[in-house]
Image 1 (tube, rainbow, N blue to C red):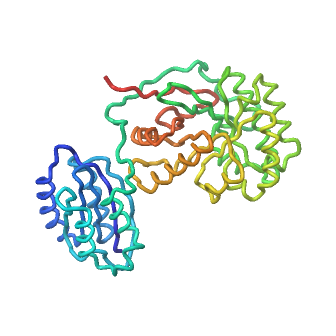
Image 2: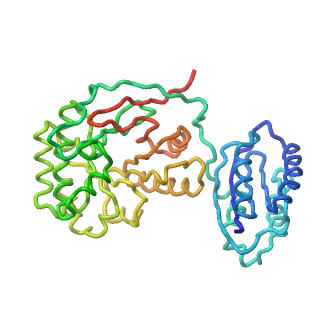
Image 3: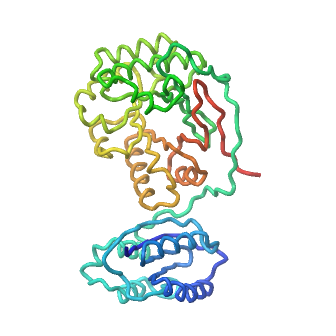
Length: 403
């Protein structure tokens, strides 16, 4: 299958124009043998490259390119498929903006194009090329956070050793901190539901009578608040996940939550209810009434796994939560994905204007955290910083600049 792959990278300062010319000459021979078309555009600081050819060959070559030390900050911008190549040359072409003007490079690129001019104006590949050449929509590449300069150190937390499996409960909870790494602060503790033997949430919910799922879902929150009391979380906030329709289908749901919160020595302002966007849509009007009740009591509201459902940003036109947690599928390897970066930057911009707190969840790599900090996100949750601990709070790994 004919594949087009575009990536952006930053040129290593030790690599000069002469080095690029030599690189391209060698790449021309290699790519011709692989039946790959390569177009490289450079401005002396950054590169944009378009690769076209059979999918397996292009992907294999891209893995090799990504490991090349002559550039860094390699970000995949587009991977597309089509019936024909956009460029006639098989091998490699170099366009150097330090040698030619923007207009000359644009004309040269179009000269080698196989697409009709009326097609290039709407073609995403040519839009990427034009944007790179003109610099009109230059987006940040790389980040001031140099991954190599950061290290992690573990800190014991003042929540005791945990309490192990708790008897006479039909579920357990594992707590995972949400942190502000650069401040060294715990923002809140999320109580993640587990089955009564410590198994997965899926195992727990699949074992339930589906006619009683909302009632049971609501009742389990009493155990989460009781755990917070046992561990002595003090003034820290605790977040619990709740099916949106549990607030609608169970009579007196909000009153039940408030009662259990106070019975366990907590304040409503310490509690954040996390809901996912999928189920919310089917009964939004009734759910919106429940939201008003929650807010009236002082309980916070967060949208969990934002971006995993169908509502997306349009949901925010109907109501604005206190917090949004960006889905881990969007976060994973964001330092390598241009589309993911564009989506997150739009979410950051939108939520900044509406004063909604953002949390990036599922952080597992230092590179992900570095890019997201640079993008403007300050709160994080994931294995990089702390793993969930059954009926307790595990240690936190805080980032520090290496000495």
